[in-house]
Image (cartoon, rainbow, N blue to C red; front, side):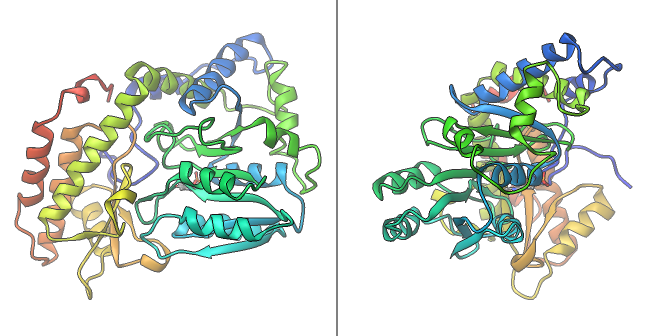
Length: 396
Ligand SMILES: *Cc1c(COP(=O)(O)O)cnc(C)c1O
């Protein structure tokens, strides 16, 4: 067993020391104003990270998956129609959840490696003259393929079609790492979890609801109890939850929001872009390709790297864990065995990224791939050397 950090899985991510300490708290009365002093700043911090003046932020003891469930059960009724693209394992799993909740799911099948086509969404919405589609779902960053989709373009397509559907965005592996504009993009529900861009242990579902999404809760009839946002909101008004809150994690969230806003969101995004670009330079130097089919959809939080045909990419992940104590991500679903993933989000610096690139290189060479040791590391080093020192500001 290895507890070595950094890990290079795309969540859970590395936890900064200050955040670990913030999560480690003595017991407090979770129905006292003291809890409010933790809860409200954490919710306000999330709102700022979402770039929203209007979002109501709710925090549940759960994970991103619970955030999906919160989204659909609070806003929709059985039989409601939703439009969603499937371009990887995470969008697939959200679709599966919608189907299991008895929603009428219209799927836009999309090649794994491509982004969501706003144009195709626009066509479907324009054809829906009776406005039967209640919600449009989009996975901002498909973590299985390392593909970032353009949410602003989806909003434009919705507006272009004059369609009133709600817009739900899975931002689990994008929020707090890449630009996310809740208000500008007219997002109705944004979903994330604690263990990715927020650099916390798993355990929180974090969602933002627009006024329009809050309105939808009045008529939505899908059953919900634990994930009822109105019950949760009533609790917040009394500095409490409807049940026992995970106080330490919420204190950690308050801390990570302070760190992200202190670093500056633009600096956080620039750091993620720079680290990701170094990884991409390495991949290119290895003569390998990303699963993402074009630069406009390259993800700055995870790179899915396709290995040569006939080679089992999962062997790299197993070997890295066994021989070097380093964690990479495996291929999921349709791309299992065909690619491995380097997660590069959260608490990470250029030099930390270099250790992952070096390890991947050793593994591929050990397993007989035609990789020249140092090729990828060198390409990333050249790129990182040209950086502007933003890395020094991040508290790792
Ligand atoms: C990790 C992830 C999820 C699932 O989140 P959990 O916290 O594991 O429930 C959903 N969507 C995306 C895009 C993810 O990366």
